[in-house]
Image 1 (cartoon, rainbow, N blue to C red):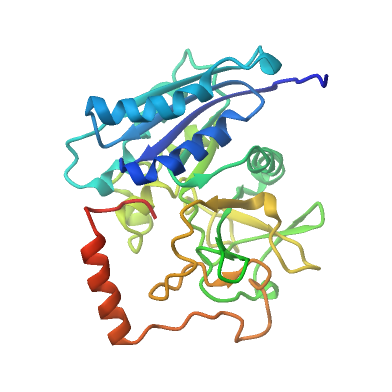
Image 2: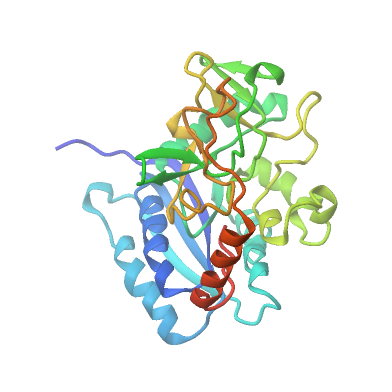
Length: 323
């Protein structure tokens, strides 16, 4: 039997979940991925917009078994709790409901946590993702840069992976870079992740910045909506000279691709085949292509757009804040 050693890491994680029964499947996969981390301690707080006993029971019945003791990792402790925010003025404010966990719990004098994770309910963050962050966080911190991620989706129509937030191709040679381990770390054109990771040093910085405050964050990124700003972390706070953001992603200069351990999977795959939106139309292997016609998305005609809008209205049962 293989020996299993827990990493000397203690994580507090907040998972943002706008309750819909159809999205419980994604929440389960997100929680399961986190529970597979071989760490000393993991406490997960689900922040949700419901407080109905039936809805909360659905969450705990589904996710609760993931927190039962595992003999192969007997020294690892894991806990689950739920915080409800049912009276928000708009569901788009729910992504901000975790902030007190950073300032009051993660950074408290009694805290033994080493890392804080915020993640949306449909972003699968693997342990490889976490290891990538911790390795390059240390290597980049002297330059005031932070390792970042890219959301990907799978399109079953052509069996390819697509970058959700990369709209069109990029020119690698035109931007500043930091070379580490054979990779060029660069600013991406669209640095939205729907998640972030903080160590204690980053958290102490974050709580003092405008990005930590819902209203003041508008000054940092006025073109991002309120939900997106909740997930931007320290992305735009005081980047070093020559960089537009603190977030940088690794690129293999030979293959002209970002490595898989810097990808986080957007579980719904809802953009890859949506003709009305430009997201998830750039393949992972074509992000830095020199061919101008590799991106297959074109704006839909007004007739197609109208028909899709009418279909959407018929299907809609309320606002959907997850991106």
